[in-house]
Each structure stands twice: as C-alpha cells, then as structure tokens.
Image (cartoon, rainbow, N blue to C red; front, side, top):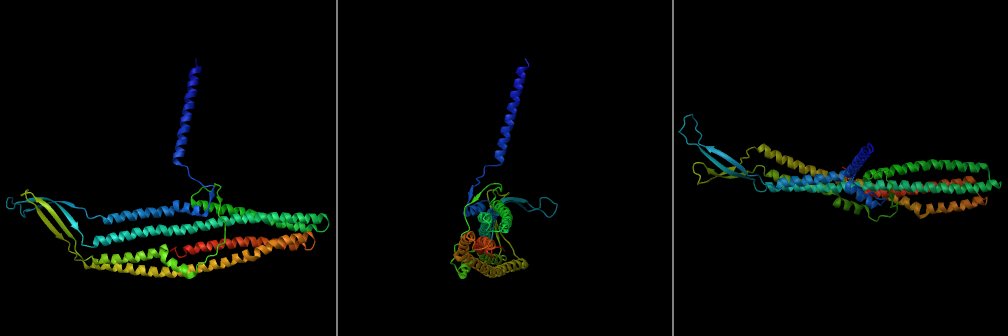
Length: 423
C-alpha cells in the first residue's frame, strides 16, 4: 500500500526537478543570446565588427540621437498660453464704485524674425558635428584594430618562423651527429648546437606568450571572448604606396573628420554672431480673449518685449565673437598639427618601406641560399660547425627582422591614416 504513494512522490519530485531545470535553462538562454562568433577573422571583418559594437561608437551614436532631439526642440515654436485676466479691481474697499470684469483668452508669442531660424541652424550644426564625431572615432578605432590585428599576425608569423628555425637546427644536429660518429667532428659541435636549440626553445616560449597576449588584446577590442579559437586569415604583406606627402596632406586637410569639424565650428560661430545681433530686437505677443460682461463680443491684445539691457546684448555678441576666434585658432593649429604628424608618419612609412625592400629584394633570399650551401659544405667537411651556426644566427635574425619591418610598415600606414585626429 505504501509503494504507490512513494512512486507518486518520486514522479512528483522528478517533474519538479525537470521544471526547475527547464526554467533555469530558459533563463540562461534568455539572458545570454547566441552570438555569432567567427571561426575565421579577416582584417576587414575585424574592423567591421569593431565599428558595429564598440562602446565608443555606440556612445557616439547616442550622442547623435541626443543632438537630433535638441534640434527638434529648437524647431518647435513657443506654446500658446491660456490666460485668465481681470480688470476694474477697486483701489478702495468700498464696493459698487468700480465694476470688475473678467476675461478668458489665448495668447501666442512670436519671436523676432530670424531668431528661431538661427537657433535651429546652430542645433543642426551640432547634429552634424555629432555625426562627424562618429566618423572621427571610427577612423581612430579602425587604425587601432588594424594595429592590434597586425601585432597578432606578427606574433603568429614570428612563432612559425621560430618553429621552422628549430627544424633547421634539427637538420644541423643530424649532420653533426653523422660526422661525429664517423670521427670527423668534435662532440663540442653537437653541444654548441644543443645550447643554441635550448636558446631557441626559450624564444619559442616567449613567441607563444606574445601570440596569446596579442590575440587576446585583439579579441577584447572586438568584444569576442578571449577563450575562442579564431584563425586570422590575413597576412603581413608589402604593397608600396604611390601617394606623395603633398597628396596625402591635401586629402587630409580636405576630408579628415577633424578638419571638417573645425570648419563646422567656424560656420556655427558665424551663426552665433548672427543670433547675437538679434539680441536687441523685440519679441511680439498677440492674444484673443472673451470679456465676461459682453460674452457676445471679443477682444484682442498686443505685446512687445522691451530689450532695455544693453549689457546682455553686448555679452552675447562678445561671446559669439570669441567663439569665432577660437574656431579660427583651432583650425590653424589643426592644420599645423596635421602637417607635422602626417609628415612624420610618412617618413616612418618610407623608412619601413626601404627596410622591407632590403630584405625582400636580395638579403633574405641570399641568406636562405647560403644556409643550404653551408649545410652541404659542412657535410663535405669544408667548413666548421661554428661557421654553420653563425649562418643560422644570421638567418634567424634576418627572418625576425623581416617580419618586424613588415609590421612597422603596416603600422606606419595605419598611423598615417589617423595622424592628427587625436586631439
């Protein structure tokens, strides 16, 4: 008789546990939606990912929305005013001497022509400036992503180059062991090569650490969990750029977001001066009302503001003039800044370009060929082991320096795209 209640209790508990598990799973999936995490990541996709969801971009987009909302507020006309008034209130407490009358009406304010238009134009300038700020932040973020991507690629390529050098040392050890067993080489040659291999292992450990650190930095910048294994598909390549410094400067001064922002500030200051010139102009007010003693009739009222304070108008004009001068100074300083920083970045890019050419056109190929020749000469007993190890060290340095030159060239080009934008 007790078996059936126990079975029912077990089923009830199992159902309760299943419900809790199902509810908990639903909550987890609701709180953390599926994210499209790529297995492969090109440079262009990395930039696209950063521009789509980086906090700086999202904040700038919200600022555009706020600027648009402020512009909408400036476009709105003054609200009408529902008014209740009275007239004929007696000066004395004696009643009956003055007949009191009440009125109910509607009043509307009208700004002096041009004032609202100027205010709306200023708000539109601010909205355009917020949009340009998104472009400026995007330009800086693109360069930041590029440099992080290049650093991760450099770390990958450095690790691959170091691993290939380890394989080359194994070939050296094999050749030295054969000569040692035949009595043509000393054991010291093998020992020196093993020491060199131990040093290389330390470099491999450092290369793996740098690869993990640079990859984590890139993924963090993109908002991708760092534990994900993402393969980087682009490589450090060399493409000489043909634009001269004059062409780059001309394009920057014309098209850079910072320069367009500077010109926008000058234009805004001009509108502020126009608005300040209207500070001494009167505003108007008109109203319609119904009197209490003659409901069948109606009345109207006209009002005119009296801008008697000259100090306020002079202050507004002085502030607008200072804003205009400030914009001119900022524009001039930005042009000088762009000229210097782009010139420096251009020189760095040219120097890195020449360094890459040195390695790719002649030096690296010569050392690679000399290694194969040196190994063959050692097998024939025509050179000593120390000469072979010297060739190995030269090859090791050449490969790493070649990769560094490619990286510095790519970084210099990225910096040239944003030189002068951080202000």
